[in-house]
Amino acid sequence: MTNTTAIRTEGLTKYYGETRGIEDLSLDVREGEVFGFLGPNGAGKSTTIRTLMGFQSPTAGSATVLGYDVTDRTAMIEAKRSIGYIPAEMGFDEGVTGERFLRYQASLKGDTRSEELLSLFDPPMDRKIGEYSTGNMRKLAVVLAFMHDPDLVIMDEPTSGLDPLMQERFLSFVRDEQRQGVTFFFSSHVLSEVQKIADRVGVIRNGHLVELEDVETLLDRTGKRVSAHVAGTVEPGAFDIDGAHDVSVGGDESSRPAAADGGDPRTNGSTPSREETASEASDTERSDPAGGREGTTVSFTYTGDYNALLAHLIDYDILDLDIADAPLEDVFMRFYGTVDPDAEVDAETESGSSVAPEEQTDV
Image 1: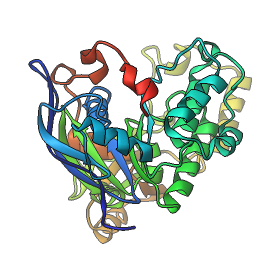
Image 2: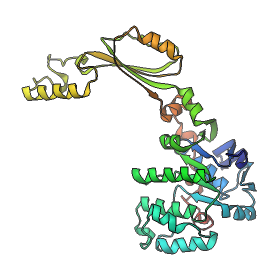
Image 3: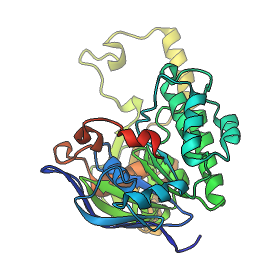
């Protein structure tokens, strides 16, 4: 991977009247990397992308894409010969077939790979686009974005509408393209999929960039997700130890309080039948790694010293223990909290339409 910059923004700001889209956004995307641009819906991701594509002018600040000034229309026409683009909302001409629309796009920007891409993603090219499902529209958008073999691909929620198998195929394709030197700017609110392919991550919230870091560092900062099933009960505050966050303590089914009349609360006080009892016991044996022993499950995110954690756990009779990487969803919630929807703006809402006319033809 080189240190050449494919995308650079400096103080990039976009307001829609008095409403903030993005403010003071400064970042660099290196050539050859997959850059994940994360944030909840409405945080400013689409505003950023529309500005980078030259579909709207910034209120303040500057940005370059492949060295071209995004405010220079002539320069951006040249830049788009080397840029692929997958918009959040496709906005295709629904009255023509996929084949006709592809040929029109080829006349604008060239076509060196459509045959390969059609074989891989298989949108129904002989049908009118108006008859497409969302998934088929997305597959056509992928073909259009890569057909001219771009050096940089800017993607806004690219897997939206794809079924799980096609999502995996697409992400595998992105990894293969990166190995060929393609750069990706990948906007998403699905953190787990970005975790699979991104080298670095920028997190945007309320129009501001709140974090810029590589994925592994973010995961290291978040630590591990620990779930310990221990014998007996756990006193309140027993796991209030350095490095333990969001501690949750819960008992087994066997420790649930009885119903008011003394019966099983799961049966509204009625006595379960012999068959129900036998079936439940069989299920417990199959699913309970503790072998049916009563206990308590303690779950938390841990960022402290692991020797200290083990020293704390040794005081308990451990029936089951699971330690795994914390998902990026936990990273996002722990560092950035909940979103204030009143403080955010969606570019599509403010622009008055989901797709600008030039997005259909200029890319």
